[in-house]
Image (cartoon, rainbow, N blue to C red):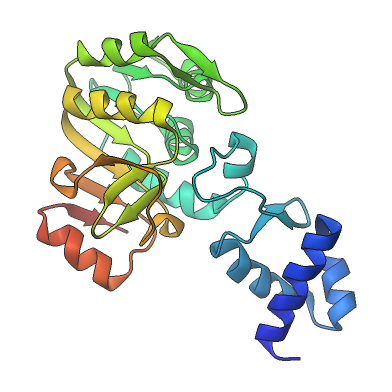
Length: 252
């Protein structure tokens, strides 16, 4: 069976059964587990399937739907960890920074090694990770909790960041497009991100390759608003556009 035929079979099967294990698909298609894993990776990158422990489930979220954190955390874990390690190089002892809500920025919170930091976040999971670190003066902005996302949002949250001035912002997003710029699905988060952008001397955007050449509901920023983009991989055409706007791109 050719790869395109396998991919169609997998999508159809998982759509019908809601989920499937790697071993199950291997037996059904009389194909090695290694081959099935490669097929599943392609389908995950197309956002057709979501990885689970030992298999996959159908991605039931539309392009502008807010995706729960537990689903985000399962996607591209290795890539997000790599991006976080790269971003950690740009945090120095004594920095004052904002860490935006997101699954990639959560990975950054886990690997921070600098000390005597002053940190602000609107993400409860990031706050928990930072609370485990030594010598961090941590402030969690108030707001209303978005269910399943662990993000705090409200008018007060926006106002909080409007009255800050920090050295660095580590920003997340849902999509990056050559024409539309940086965008996000959730309107409750967009105004907060815009306030964060204005509060920082330096803006460092963190995004994995699945965000590239995509756009979602609401624009957050233009490329001119960003100083650095840290990613695992960026298509050449998009890289050229972003670099032409003066953004430093870091992939290694």
